Image 1 (cartoon, helix red, strand yellow):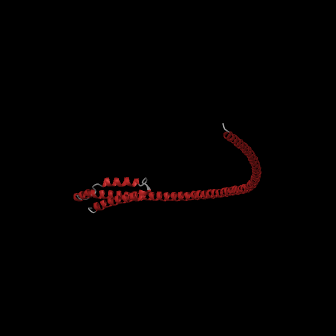
Image 2 (image 1 turned 45 degrees about the horizontal axis):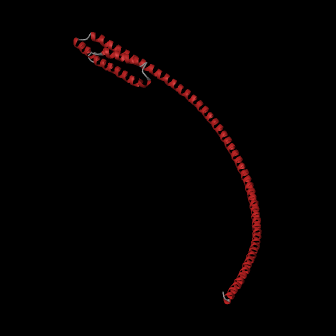
Length: 244
């Protein structure tokens, strides 16, 4: 190896040594910078954490105060509600008491009215019953009087009808007696005129006796029938007497 090459090798070695020294210094400086940055970061982190704790403490304190105020407001509101509720309950109970009193007063009044109405109705029924009894007694008296009058009238009718029938019997007897001394022609004419006399006379007598039992509603009709029968007998005798 020549001198120049040796000199170059030495120079290269020297340069390498300088570079290595610079690299070491740079590495050391970098390490120091890292440590410094780390310390600053820890300091900043510590400062930030302290501020956060203080801020959190302030926030927590405010929340506690807000919670306390909210609880206080809720308690106050609850007390107001309870107070109002007590007043409302008191008012409701008073209203219920008034309503119960009104119901009792109404029930009492209705009971009094019902009792008064029952009394009036009982008095009306008593008066009506009394009036009905008196009216029934009057009606019974009128009916009795009418029955008595009707019975008396019935008896008079029967008696008068019997008297008329007796008079007709006497006339018939006189006609027969007179016809006994008459001519044969007159006898025949009288006998013809007296045809059916006996049956008609029996029917009239039967209807006269029935006047005693016929109803008041049919009395006038029965009287008319008897009068017709007696009138028919009278005409028979008139015809027979005309032949003598």
